[in-house]
Every structure is written in C-alpha cells, then in structure tokens.
Image 1 (cartoon, helix red, strand yellow):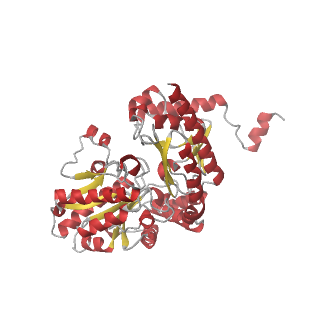
Image 2 (tube, rainbow, N blue to C red):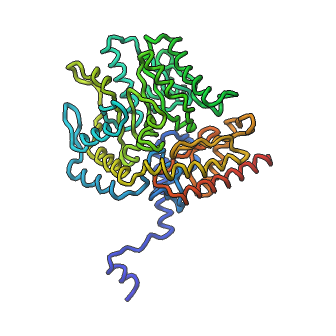
Image 3 (cartoon, rainbow, N blue to C red):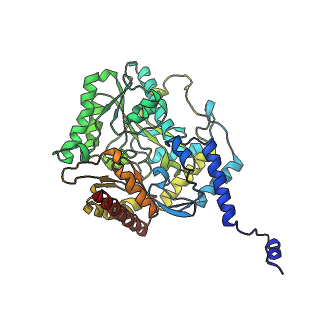
Length: 474
C-alpha cells in the first residue's frame, strides 16, 4: 500500500512542506505590509522590513517564524494567567453560542455582565462598588474624565475642569487620555493641547531625580509637587489627580513608600478626586489584588483593563466609589455615554472565568509569597553588572535601570538606544523584554516558574555583557 493511500485513508493531511510554510508566511507579511497600519509603529519601518508574524502561544511562550520566545512582558503586561488556557476558549465558545451579543444600553444587561460587576465590587478596596464597562484602558480613563466633569457640574462647581497628571504618565491613546500622558511625543504630532486641560507635575522617580534625598524624603517632595500645583492653579479649578500606582509603561517607576499616603491626604485636604489607573497593576500584579492595597491608599475612582481578562478579550472597567456614583445618579437623566460593546456578554464571561482561575489557583497569593520574592531576589543580582544602576521590583513588575555611571546615576544619551540594544540581544537569546528609554521593563505572566525566572536573569546577564563589551570597545 502506498504512503499516499495510507494518508488519504487515515483522513490526515500530510504536514505542510517548508516551501509551503514560507509561501504562507510571505503572503501574510505581504498583505500586512500593504493594508495594516500598526499601533505604535513607524509605518516606514514596515516598508523596509516585513512584520514579525506571531502565530501561537502557550504558557509563558509565544511562537512565530520558527522561534519560541519567553515573553517576560506577558503581551503588554496583560496575559496574567498565561497563554493558551482552554478554559477561557471554552467559556467564550459556550457564551457565544448562547448569547453572541446584545448591548447594555437602555437598562439591558446579561448574566455574565451582572456577575462580573458584582465580583469586581467584591474584590475592590474600600467603597469602590459601581462598575462601568468599556473595551480598553484608554476608554476606561476617557469615561472617568467625562464622568468627573459631570460630577463637578452636578456638585455646582463646573469650574473644576483641570486634571493633574505626572511626568512619565501613560493613561491611553485617545485625544483626552493622550493629553494626560507625560509624553510629549504623543502630543505634538497630533496637535494635542494640554494647557488649560492638564497640568503635569514631577514623577516620584527617585533613581533619576532624587539626588541626595533619601527615597522617603523624595517621596514626600514628589507628593508635595501635586499640592504646589494645586495651589498655583487654585483648588477650585482642579477636578482630579490621575495617577498610576506604579508608572509601568514608561519605566516601571515604583514610588517610595512615603508617596501615596501623602498624595491621598493632599487630595482629601483640597476635596479633589483621586483616580488610580490600575490598568496594569489591577488583579494581582503587585501581589495584592490592587496596588492601592500594596501602597496603602484609597482612590475615588479606579480604572482596570489588561488583567481583567488576561488579554483574552478586549474589556475594561471604571470602578467608582459610592459617594461618586451617588452624585452621578442623583438626577433622573439619561447618561449620554457608552460604547456599543460595553459589557459584551462574551468578554464579561471570559473575564469572570479569568478571575476564577486567579482565585482557584491562588496566583495572586503566589506572587506575594513565592514567585514574587524569588523574581525580586534573582533580578536584583543584576545590580552587580556595570551597566545596571538599579533594579526595582514590586510583585511581578520590574524596571532595570541602565546607567552610564553607577556612582552618579548618570544615564546614557537616550538616542544612543542602549536599552534597545540590550533588548535586541535578549531577544536573540529567546527572551522578550520591553525597552523604555534607558529602562528595561518586565511584567511576566503570573504562572511563570522559577526555572523560567532563572532563564530571564541568565539571558539578561548575557545580553548586558554583550552590549557592555561593545560599548567599551567603541
């Protein structure tokens, strides 16, 4: 019997040939180059070189073009329970068969949306009990901005419009949330104005700006910068302070312990709303369900996204305190805000299952008691390297500061791209980290093993050695 006949009779197709795989890859790349505009990508770069095609993922690894890479960024700090969980695929399929979609406008709900809102409220700290669903962190923060404006109008103080944000902040990529960002590169190309809308103050970035102050002293000074800005513009004009508990996107900036309690006290003193952007830190990243618990403060509003579904579905949430939501709901008037897919039944069902996995597998506790301390202990050994000025870690988020001179904490010129070079050297060794301007950011999945942490540290040590040798030779 011929091999062709055996293949046909078994019902199995032969595996694709290398030539067929190369042709399929080339087709995808060609279509992408011609038609797909990528976020946060130089369009000209994709003209010069084709996109990298990822086509599979499992656990802490992503696969594409014949490579298997340990993803120490969990996508973009979101795939908390790891890739390829069949439970989430099953829930998505079951829900889609039962209720593929219906909107939540005009007082309509669906079972998973109601259950998820209640679950978030039960987990959230303090009196954060009311949930509005959206589809991304940007949309959640945009919703917060709109509702804050409504809140102050209903309080009879429509002049409270100014938002205080910080240098190195990242809150999204819509027009309003881009204005909140402490990143002028996201303002200038689009003509986004911040004057009169957003005031930026110093970040609690001790390593770069602390000078001779202790972290505790600097934390208080950075918090006081918020009060100085409030007094400069007038408390009667300030609506809210927007802040990430850890400034993840632009450097994994972990504030000194003195910072957050003082910020909260300043907001309470001047009756200004405090918004905690927990899009990255929410749902366990720091070893507590929310970073507010880690740093000892209580916000009036909290925004959530990435870890809510571990990136398996686009979903986000604004969580409001009872006092805030009571003011929003005190008048009989339609809330003129929402998104077609707010509280999507499939997305909310997947998010519910994701939270169930986090709880049943005790993944948040594991960060606090086991893998988090191990991650910190292993990563901080890199501080001995001549290129590393500081390693800062909270739970499973870390920033590795690249320094030209360790004693003075002097940085390399940003345009030299030393962090990019180290990131590329790590990638060549099978490791994904995120360069962020003289910082390497890591946010691995919660399911990462000790052996995988060891691999991260070993690969980074080799990458740092390679680039340090090259710098010394240049």
